[in-house]
Image 1 (cartoon, rainbow, N blue to C red):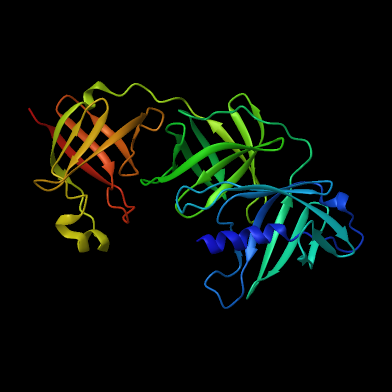
Image 2 (cartoon, helix red, strand yellow):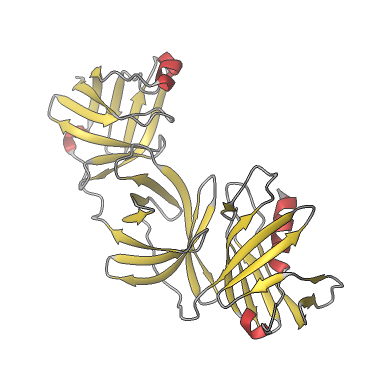
Length: 337
């Protein structure tokens, strides 16, 4: 992991002008867009960066900055180096190493780095007009369209966010933070798979405009949703399973009695949602209620549960608690005295 981090940082150090580009063309803040690995590796085509890192070039000073990933403990780096530009080479002060073969354009920069294999990296220059943002999404929920799909993202607290599809029953847990680089503010989203820096462009009433420069540039609009409503009092209590829809999913059939859908009872309080599976197995979750969708977010299970109906004696939920099964089905409960 440390070796990969060092190699990634060396990518950042490779800055060379081509054609008639002067050092002034390099000035600004740059963010990595994607990498292309050799054809004989597992990753083919354009690959998103493993973590967010930036270049800030001003005059003969080059600042390298990236943010530590909590998931894989990527090393955080924030350092500034001096360099000189000579023909098609950049020479770092006090260093005998020079770098070459980088193409710099008005708003993009392509790097070919040769370290036992050729890896091509693209950087995007950020627009000059920008200002820091004081936006804080903690405790709020937003809706956004990404590649044609509608997603909700609920910022549970000051570091955790749950992302889920409108019609989905599973959530993707992300760590989040707001970070500033020079005069730019970024929303950094980090899941187990990747780290995505979103440039915060502007805020207007209940809408937040951000830009994702990973792979292909895409502008997204976050629309703030109504805040979490009061949890229905009728939900509180102990509920015994009466019936559930059958599921022909092969995963659940394979798991058999160990499937999380083979529950026999749930217990709901104002703060917890406990699921009882087998005689001595249970799972307790913090939960949040969204009145506009009539859904419950179970944080530990990373699942969305649809509230179909609740009365004094009966509770009907639509859900699927298995990690790899996405077909929701109805569960009918009666209140246990």
